[in-house]
Image (cartoon, rainbow, N blue to C red; front, side, top):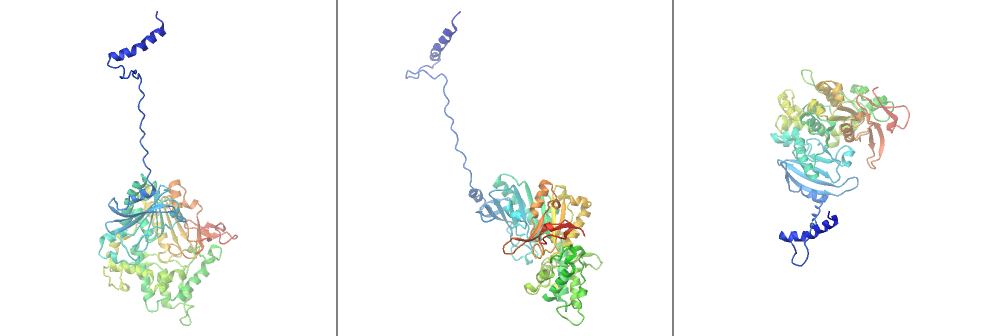
Length: 527
């Protein structure tokens, strides 16, 4: 038997011979060939450069995307209270302008801010504080027209402008924004929200009823959800004020406001200047009737008629209700702007807005005398306008896809009556199959002492975007989140008073002790 080591040695010595026989062998320099060549080092490709925030922003300038022409794309540096973002502006079909803010540090969510009046400009600042600070992609548009929010002339014989303003602009811009978000971040937003007040509140309800899949959560503040009915009430109030002897001076308006506060303030347990128990507050203007001639301390019969027109339901000739009228409170702050117009030259914003609908949408006559408008004669035109402008209470599809909604309204709102929101809230229950079905996806809050969208004697600052996000994403109803509304000092922005935000029909009632300006001194009660 051969020595195994000798055999191994023989085998190794034989390798060069075998290689020579196979055409291998020396490399010509007397070196033996390498038996097991070492592979050449792998060349690692250089890392792909990471695009800067500026580069990611610049790609949108001048681009065409989803049918929109993008114009400006500017990286806005961080400033006090605001993080860095890319500002993108664009336009659809030549008239619908929009703006998108793409934060460098994104929370994976989107927030669309609604407009106001007849739109005409872009206001991308959310009402809720968290909207501007939590890292949302922010979106806003101008409703498809540019100009004064009081001017409705662009809608005269203009179906495109009417459709955009009425129901289409938010949805159209939202579709473009989705593509912008995908291009910037590589994915869709995890959650999309909408917040709007006044016409923006109408837009919010249009979205929920016509495009229920666009947004996961919606905040509806003081909604003008039925333009055609609300604006008929505007015109009726204007007619009463224009009647001989019907005008109300600032002194008379102040008299009404002070009388109501004196009568109703303490109904919430404390005389603090805020009427919180609105349901229990009733007012009959006749208690101020003049008995010894006209004076600033009383109301004439014609002035009582004017006041009653404003507070009462507006009815058709057949007795059905058009609009529920306004509740008492805050007249001294709200009427000079919205009703009498003394703060803006003598014609209130109510009548100005109502005139726009009548002239440029219903009659099609810019020279029409609105004081002579007969809604019964133009009922067909009003119904046609309603098909474009008004939101229905049918939220079944929105609720069915998991959508959550918060409705809020100030009780001293002299643009849009909080009673209209109560009616809408009740109509939703009827439409969706009962209050329990509605309440599983929608909650309603009155804001005592708050004027239109903001202002007034009551606490007008409350974060409802954060509340609806917690509800949609975590299942916690707003009424269980201990939400507090605050009033901020106009100069320092420091809180000067606070109240719990109470789910309708409850209101913040004073507990009987404690700081009257602290929310802890109040609880939500129904009586």
